[in-house]
Image (cartoon, rainbow, N blue to C red):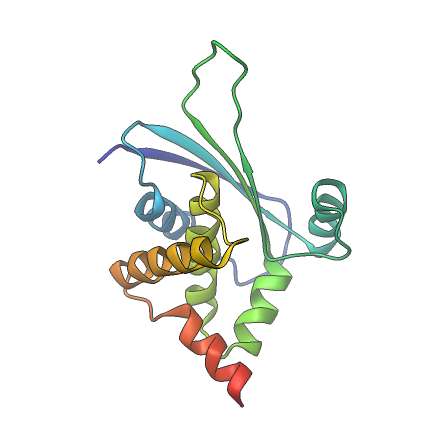
Length: 157
């Protein structure tokens, strides 16, 4: 299994952010590549998330995770997976709403974002099913429950 270097950037003073080694473990577990690579995980506040969400996705307000895969210019090979931008207040709020531990939801956001960096998507139903199944398997390897069962339970109540 190829190694993954994880660079953590803390751009918020929100509390409750997991330790760097947790991010390292979660990201490494979700790195499915055969080559060594590097990812930057930037933890931001709502204002920075909303600004990036508007600029890159034309959507209003902050979001839980944004993924920016690295696209090297032609002829350049650099071992970079890309950047994940995770909004601490949104992750904490969603964890409460979905009745998950903060750690469960942080891990899910890292795994979800890492899969996006590797080309997985959930726009089409069949792609969504494949991505969710992979997320469930990777999170189970990390000792976490199916994140979608919790959400489905919420929707049913």
